[in-house]
Amino acid sequence: MAANNKYAALTDWLQQCGKDAIKLTFEELNEIITIPPSAYRDRPSWANCTTQNSTSFQRSWLNAGYRVTGISLQEQWVEFTKGDVTVSPSRQTAAVARIKKRAVPTTYEDELLLMVPDNLLGLTKDEYLMVQLTKENSDIVEACIAVDPAYQSKGKAIMEGYFNAGDYSAKAYYDIINRVATENSTRTSKKTMECMAAYCADPKNNFLGRIEAGDKYLVDAILQHLVQNGSRKDKSLASKLCRYLNEWLYGGCAYTINDSVVRAILPYYLAYYKIDRALWQGKNFEELSYIEFYTIFSAVRDKVAVLNNHQLDHLIWYAYKNDSIRSEVAMALAQVL
Image (tube, rainbow, N blue to C red; front, side, top):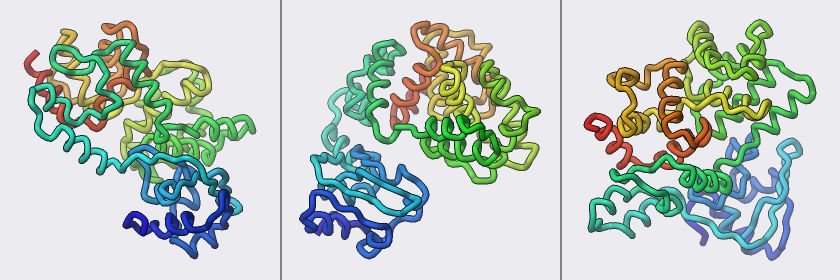
């Protein structure tokens, strides 16, 4: 019997079907398993994700040695093709294995790096074993992101489909915003995304004109609109929307993402680089406006000098996003350096 989960029957069925390629309608597939609701509307549900981020649904065909090679959500069919597939373990299993491998840290360094995934152990570190903000480390992280199936974006294609057709409606913006939220694991309500889309589609807000100009005050304007209309102030999604559209449409690098991981780690680098404490010390980074956050972030970027906005926020975010140990250390060091 395949792995014990509710989609194991598909693994068994594919292993026993004896075909190199098989096309099934969703109705036929539902006779084998119950397709998750998200798979009817969300193409990434069918991604051949072979990393630790894969879902049990995705592993049901990957564990059988098959890949999805064709999919139509409109016509409701999927094609599986047999091929060489190496599936990484689940996030939980991988974490347990990693910790077991380093179960008894023999040095302070071993203990501090316990949560660092193997592909990031090569990042160079400073004297406090925190990641150095160098171009070499940035290149390593960008290479990891480029091949990580969990971060392959379809948002740009969706945007181009609408905008090339001259569709700048609230519906178009909603679909773009929803894709940005989905691909960045941003938990945002439909109400908030609809409210944000309405702001973007309103001609009087000159949304794309401000995006092209790299107007940093635009993010706060979106947030103010959300609050005035009874929606949650979603700093992360508002900044991500501006960041990606500025890049996708105009090749720009004007924005950085106001991300919770970056907010948590940034004080360490501010202290490490001895940036004027009047700029940041004693401030609640969770409560800062976007323009305040961007000003503080820029102080670190300018000090490092070799990284742009995107490279710097990628490096900090990807290096620390699952590193609870060094995240705690970073907060403590920010108080004493």
